[in-house]
Image (cartoon, rainbow, N blue to C red; front, side, top):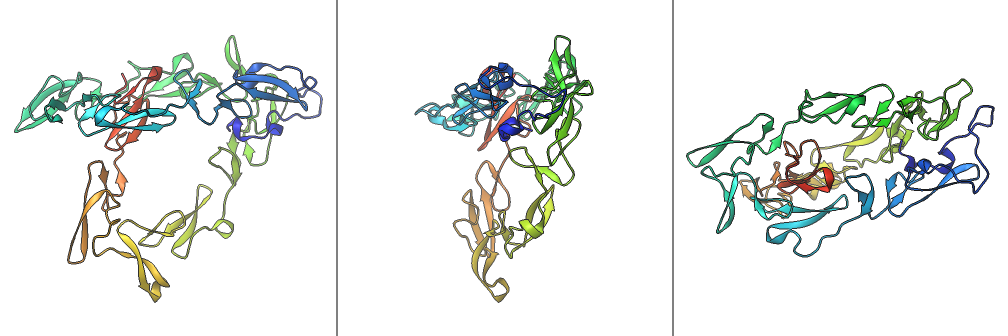
Length: 403
């Protein structure tokens, strides 16, 4: 459970009994590690209280404050802003997760959209699709052949994609798990199975109930602020931390939701919803509970979280008595929104068809193609843009390829 979503009273949970955590008087200092080493810790009303450094927020200063984002070294830095001309004449600047990224015109690539993508080459008209092999047709990841004005790439080992721009992941060449985990690449994406006591995507963190020592993550023998995942009360009468979980939480370290509870957007365990008390559907939808959340299954032609909107290809009109006088009916002529503003509409004998703009798919051009599928980010974070993507690579570097 994320510490930022908790109240101060749940930070450590003190039992008034022998062997429980004891705190100093108000105003006394406490270890800065309580505040994630990103703030000043002092005791207040027997609880550790954090005064976060600039850029940090949350009960234990574990998240970035508004207007800041995570840098490659996990520090919080000020959000970037788009400036005129940042992406040149061939791209549009966008801010994603606090970073400026360039969405490039088709055929262009690079962090600033100032070069041609693999499979394209520079001509007077700009970056145009290769119809004969060039030195850059397959980048540095494969060999090119041309047939009838179409090129194809035969990729080298550990490279894939239409133009061999994507690195396939292998534990042999890229093992992030260190000494505390086992690397697995059977799916083509590297993942780590952590040893007991370790957690995190690279097994670099201690699992709840374990403490970092010179010998590594060892089973804790005394209570620490995180012993019960900030969701329970800790005591160590038996020689090791014992947790009494708050309502809705369970497990030895209170790090899972109890039966009848689910995680919300703030990662808190909250009571499962029911359609009897949480039915948000209009008369155009039926309520059902999925993973503890009441959701709406809409009638044909309707959409939206409450089924109050029209599905792509339908419009609001006089639907007759069956629809209560107004309803969402199938488009039979081209309307401005028929192709969801991302395609060209044609109508023939009451049947409408959409020719989608580049970057969109769907019967009504309602879906932005996910360009992060088969991206060349090599396992790093990928941001989907319109007909392009940006990789957030190690060291704060971004572009369309991560090495």
